[in-house]
Length: 277
Image (tube, rainbow, N blue to C red; front, side, top):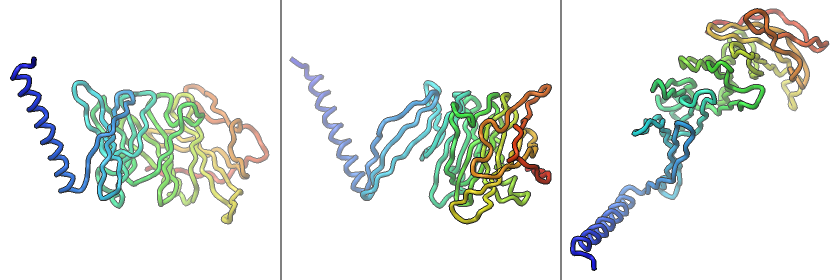
């Protein structure tokens, strides 16, 4: 037989459960919502918790990003919309928090977080749709030396190509730099030099303003970082542009340079200089 103490304990537990349920019901009636945790996903040293809030018949998923450091989880951001972890450093993550109508708010935009330093930097201030090239792509967003990343962003103002210094959090919009020299172009990232210190970038200009817009002029540039330097290499017209094999990285001394495969489609324009940001 159960002791009197056990019976009292069970009864107390049932009473507390009823009280808690009633309290939650009252809160839902008072505030019009119910907050229900819906699990979490773990990626390396990061945990993304999701919870669903139901208000006035509408459902919204709230995602919170944590950096896992036992025994506590360090909360990095809430209302997470996009995230990608640095494949070369599990302590670093790039994430976006979209805020409708609040693009310039401190908590809105795209950020770089380094868990080992417990620091974060805002790298893209506006709400933008980002594209990171996967590690198995020749245009892998992450440099081989682990220092830099390049990714594309699209927003209401057009296409952007962001260069990011992963050690300092500094970022430069290469599309903005090219627009400063009067070229209305769309930037495309083509790939890194084998040592990760330079990148090949194509600036594409549409020559035919009417659909289907198949006539392009593509300028190939070699971009070096810290400090930012750009070297114009040549231009090509047509639908295909600079395909794989039309140029390659060759090592000259201690650095890599782009060498162009000879073709009657390639021509030289007046030399242009990229302004310093």
